[in-house]
Image (cartoon, rainbow, N blue to C red; front, side, top):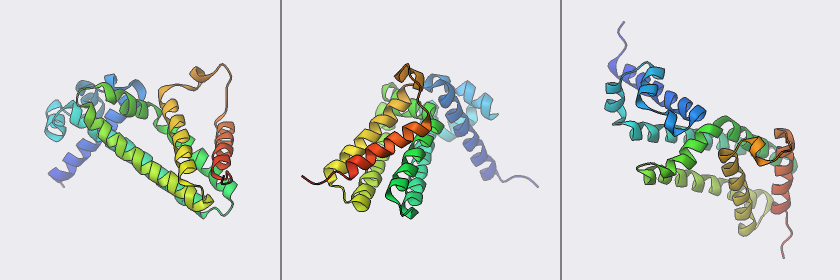
Length: 204
């Protein structure tokens, strides 16, 4: 039986996006060339241009998939934390989940959050990043205010601390932070304590 044309097209597009993400994860945006993508995905230049219009269109699709994955992973982590009755364990679960997301998507996040700001059509990439940032900010601050009755200012400050950590994780490898090493477990524990301390700050 012949595979429907639409199914073959979708499969080809998915392979191209997956290849672009893998290349960005390993070598940044400069590694995502049309020839590298088509070779890795066993597709053709013509198919890529037909589906995405060129390299920028492909990169935008890849960025959207990466950021959607981050959003879904975040939503899943908060759903799990919401089912945990113990506040300290709930925050610890969230801290560990956040570090897992950073680790899984580090190279791609560096490419699509940082490098993409300095390419042609950068405003298109920035708009998608802003949308994700605002969605995550709403999720984090809303949860802190509901779970801990944190004031809006403290919840926002906590989000900004977490965002700073995410950004630094995207920009630097662990050995570039310090000569000392720190395990993900220790970092997650410390991050959880920091979040809890801010969230539970007594009102002035």
